[in-house]
Length: 143
Image (cartoon, rainbow, N blue to C red; front, side, top):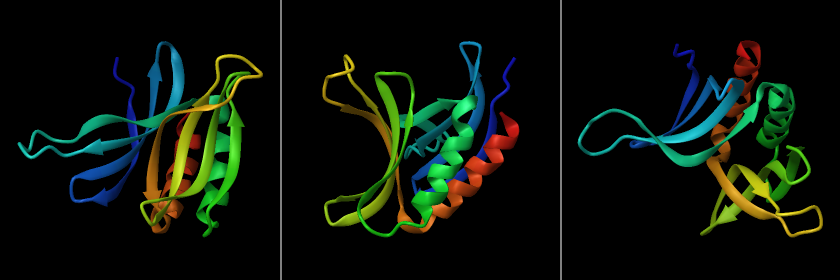
């Protein structure tokens, strides 16, 4: 049974979109925020490794974090959502190569007193962060 529901597709470029999808994976209901690309051969949109997923229990916190992120204009850590002792999802405004964007990224550590290491994530231009917050609100209704 395929119970994936595409909530939103947020266009970044002509060949790149960020999709918000509600799905079941390994028996757990998840919200997945992932970058997709459109290859030159025209085979349709394909997912990349750039993205973050969180269980339905955390979608409400993600909505709050995305709303705070959409109101921020300067480089800053905006919100953290713990995922157990050794993982967290961070919502932040970052600067990369003189471009400022919103970012959702998973961070991990090997043990409680270890340094955090960044994992996979997704970025969006500041002007699109409101669309992300809106999509997560809709996803909350579907989890």
